[in-house]
Image (tube, rainbow, N blue to C red; front, side, top):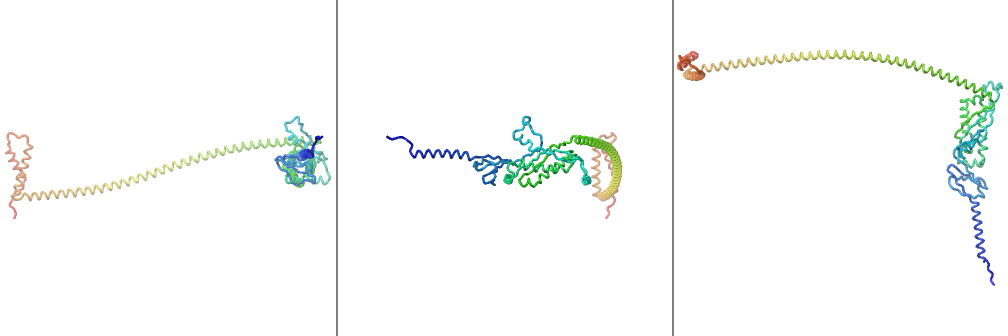
Length: 407
């Protein structure tokens, strides 16, 4: 009879499966991961000590049995010294913002002198009596990523509640005790104290050593515990404010009066300038008019001189032309007379002799014919022969007597 059961191979397979399951569970139980944001850095705390490797943004795996991650925020953070907490029910802030605005430490009482003492008073041991002062403030800072390992090794994650708090309160006390309560409480002294503490924090070597870079320091409030002294300071401050207000009003009144005076002087000067300008313009216009008249007279004078000279030149040219014309006319008349005389002389010479007499007869006949043509009426007592006879006698008388021809 054969009994059923698991073989050795099957048993080994079951054992192997169990071991794999145990290994898987152990792996997922021991191997973990952390997601690092851009404003964060992670320091690895191992069994052997703090690793020098700093994890930046991204997903990182680590063995949970031997390594512990510490996340540090390297963005701007605040450390608040105040005694007033924020009620989560009466605010619109988110959880992280609410956490950042909650006080990290209560303010400490700082004993300061009520009034400022001179070096002589201090040397003589004089005192005005200490009065407690509370300073509420905020320090803004960020961590240097390159020095996170050193900070974690020396101060661990509790660096805020121990290291930063101790150094900050120490500097606040040291810088406040050298002043008097009146100076600390009043505006100018408060600003000076804030600037002094901020400069000391930024220059603090302990902060620089561990990469704590201070960005800003602000005093929120200064509280005086002595109510009577506080009322006295407030009354003095009110009196001082009233005095300054009166001075400002007086200065404003003086400035207004000075402005009115300056305006009046300006108006007077403007009128004087306008009058001087107007007078200058009138003088300039008169001078211009005078110059215009003088120029016009000079121009007229030059025009008349030029006209007279032109007239003289014209008369001279006309006289010379007339003289030349008369000379030419005289020469023409003389030449004409000579020509007529020569013609008459030649005609008289032509009339001499038989040929001349015949020519004269022809001329008489031609002249008689021309004359008769113009006679339209002849009296009954006259005839053509009578007219011809008379014309012959007339021309005979007019003609020169023919003499013997010279040889």
